[in-house]
Length: 201
Image (cartoon, rainbow, N blue to C red):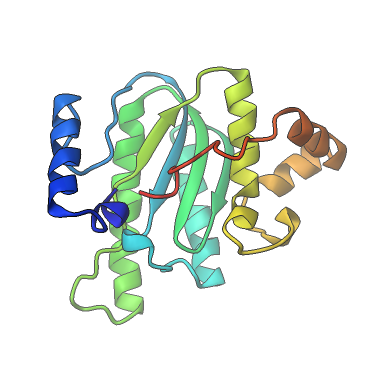
């Protein structure tokens, strides 16, 4: 978590790195201990949480690219949200390695394109490496689904989830209806600590 890591003292940084090494994790990058078929929440943020996705047109194009890329490998896309400096993607996939390959391509191509568009000839770093969380059961899945759709409100981008169009919320509204969404929220409302640190890559 480089964004938080830079706030630590040299002694605290050393302790964090040593702890990660003891767990078999890379020194600084997000660990990916589970590499099997399953349902995952994928999260990736713009480097240092800079709002590189602030432009609505850019968000729309990125949303289309992200969804299309995973649909092409027959991943079951369950939910997503694209914010101004990070995104969440909830999906079921047969091979974890496919996730790494696709995101490497997406992050690489968008970095090149956006740096060119923004006049960043100094090769500005656009993305931090993605993190993943494997979904354990149906309750965890539904809470994560609600967390994803509520994310724009959580980050103060809008006051109403329906005011943010870069998410899968509207697909659920069309397919299941607002009543289902409201009942699902009441039944599987994320707790105040649910998703803690998920966005702090």
